[in-house]
Image (cartoon, rainbow, N blue to C red; front, side):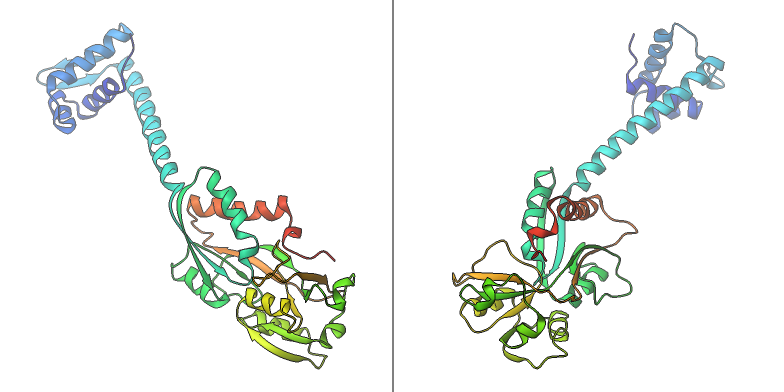
Length: 305
């Protein structure tokens, strides 16, 4: 005879209280249902497991205590499975708030999100374009669950993992003389009119590359696409790090990315999140970002040297 989980619960509750009537009060059922459950358990084992006395209530004999202990473990395991299932469903659903440093993330974030969502995550994404500082501030104050930023300028309190080190490259219009070069030097780039990406961290980084050279900056632009469009229109060259898969600007001009032969410091793309207690959803996203650069390779977004 099978024993239901409900019968196990009634049996153990009665023995824990030492009283069928008190067990009935806790479980909010009739005392007769408790008595029937105890009878069911004893019939299933074909054993007397309890001692029922009107004056002393109900107690377990030696066999009954062993059965009660096993029932309690089974009930605890069953409750744990239900809790884990509910937690897993909740962990893989809900809102994921991502702050990203504009010049770097659009080159690779969409394919990461495609694989992440297809893995069964029932989520609503909130993607906010930030500068490098506000991304980190947002992580620390709870605005964002995770941020993608450049860790050359990192807050001491920010936990992060490095994803890739992105080398600099020179962006030129398709008809430019550099477009036919296998690589160029910083000194060669310095002879050209330059368009500088004017974002926190980025502007200082790009201008530091030319400290030993006299340069002519013809434009500062605070978006990567504006830099690319200005280059495509022939206004000058630019130095960038993350390379989109497209070779065209918004204006439709053909662009060429030329490696720089000088040993320049890269920009380090990192992912910031609370490592002390990451939500399952956050940890899965972090893992998806790592997997993208481990398996797909950073070459999808970078210029090879």
